[in-house]
Every structure is written in structure tokens, then in C-alpha cells.
Length: 240
Picture (cartoon, rainbow, N blue to C red):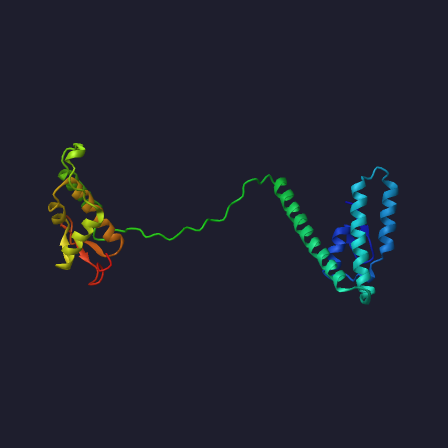
């Protein structure tokens, strides 16, 4: 881009306009005649100058004249004209942002930096189940082994033989009644009282749901000891 050499400023004409609007340079100190003369000299040397360059100069020059007129003759401007001038400032601010973004992209392309990190997406808080410290991995494995041993060989029943289904809410209600009778209940007893493989599975899911809702906690007093479900409080099961 052609650069203009003035007494108090040196840079592209668009940057000069930005500095004027930010009041970093007093426009009355700028010799527009010198700007025009230097630019015309440049045009004389460049006979092949594209028409869009000349159009850009005329647009910026018109804005400079408007700003200078407002400073020199403020009484001649009405409110609508003031608003128009304010719109020019906003346009130049948008233009400045695009110029800075273009320069930043050019720098990154020059460094061949084509990979950009994305901000971490917010993760919604979820309720998770964390086993108590006293519950070891080996104890949990043994419990699952016993559960699998209690499962009989799978036989798909005929539709006409299905007389009753066991719901999760029903097993939760059964567990609630057991815990209402005492502060704790043995985990193995719950599985032994189940009358079918389906009741064992649903009972296990019901226990996990109660632990997830923090209505009960699982406790194991030692290695190889039975797992006991303990009610967290008197009112913990009321809402179930």
C-alpha cells in the first residue's frame, strides 16, 4: 500500500483516519493538500493503477473532509449529520478489526500454524456412584460371581406362561420396607429372598438406584465379610 509522509504522521491513509477518529492526532494539523499532492504524484508514476485503488482513496478522503468540517464548522451540522459521522466511526472500527484479523491470519500462515485449540466445552454435572472405601474390588467380584451362580440356565418363556413382571419401582418398595424395619439389611439376604432370576437382576438394579440417590450406603466390615446396606437417615426413603 502507498504510504504518505506527513509532518506528524507516517502510514497508510486508512490508519491515518483511524488515528484521527481516536483523537490521537488533531486533524487540523494534517495538511490534506499534502496528502492529495503526494497521492497525485503517485498516480502520475503509476499509469496502470487499478480503479479500485482510486475509489478507496476518494472514499477515505471524503470521510477525512467530513471529520475536518465537523471540527472547523461544528455549528453547521445538525443531529442527523452527527449520527452519520458516528456511523462512519463504527464502520472504521469494524474495518480495523478485519485488518487486524487478516494480519494475524497472515502471520499464522507464514508460520505454517494450521492447528488451533478449541476451548473446552462445559460438562454438565452428573451424579455418579462411587463405592465406599471399605468395599474392595475382590469383594465386589465375589458378589457378582454369586449373582451369576444364582442365575439358572436361560430359557425363553412362552408368552402364555408369563404371568407377572417385576418392576424396578416394586423392588425399591420392597427394599424400603426392609430398611424401615431396621437401619440395615444384609445384601446376600436380599438376593436369597428373590424368587426368580428376574427378581435377582431387578433387585440388584434397585440397590444401585438407592445408592445413587444416596438413600443407602454399602458397607463391608472386612475382607470376605458380607456386604450390608445401611440406611443414610430416617427420612431418606420417604420420597421413594
